Figure 1 (cartoon, rainbow, N blue to C red):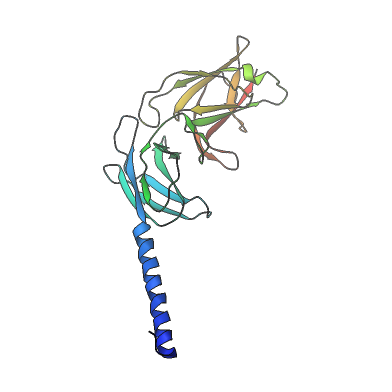
Figure 2 (figure 1 turned 60 degrees about the vertical axis):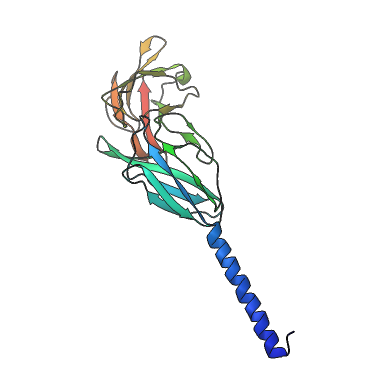
Length: 238
C-alpha cells in the first residue's frame, strides 16, 4: 500500500516512465524495412537507381536510398502509410531523362515494411498513385490555317539506332486518336513521317523556325517547361 503523498507521486511517476518506455519500445519494434531488387527487362540489375518511399498522407515527406551493384536496396521505414517508387536517371544522346520504373506491387504499406521489386519498362500504362505511361508523349499541332482531321493522320516512327535501354526498337504506326496526342512511345531517337488521305504531310518541331520537311528525326525532350516530361511536340503542314 502507498503510505503518503510523496510515495504516491513516486508511484505515479514510475508508472508514467514505464508506459513511456513500453510505448517507445513498441514503436521501435513496429518499424520495419522496405527492400527489393531493381532490374531491366532482360533481368540485369540496375545500379544507382533512386528509391523514394513517400508518405501517403503528409506532402513531401519521403525517405530515399540508392540501389547497389546487385540492383538491391533496403530502407528502414517508421510507423505510417507509405508508397515506394523507383526512378532511373539516364543520359541518352546528351539528354538526361528521369524515368519511373514498374513495381511488382502497387499497394501501399505501413511501418511493418514490405518487399517491392521494380522493372524498367519502356512502355505500358502506369497505375495509381502514379498515373500516365512509361513511354514518351507526342503532341500534334497544326500549322495555323491548316485544318485536317488530326485523328486520321497516320504517323510512322522508325527508330534510329538503339532505344534508351539499348534495345533495337521497332517501327511503329500510330494515330493521335484524340486529335492531339500520341501516348506511350518507347523513348528513343526516331525518324517521323505523316500521311493524310494518301498524301504525305510536312513536319517540323513545334514553335520553331525550322523549315517543314517530309521526314523529321527527333529526340524526346526530358522536359518542356510547363508542358510535359519525356515528350516531343510536332507541327504539321500540307
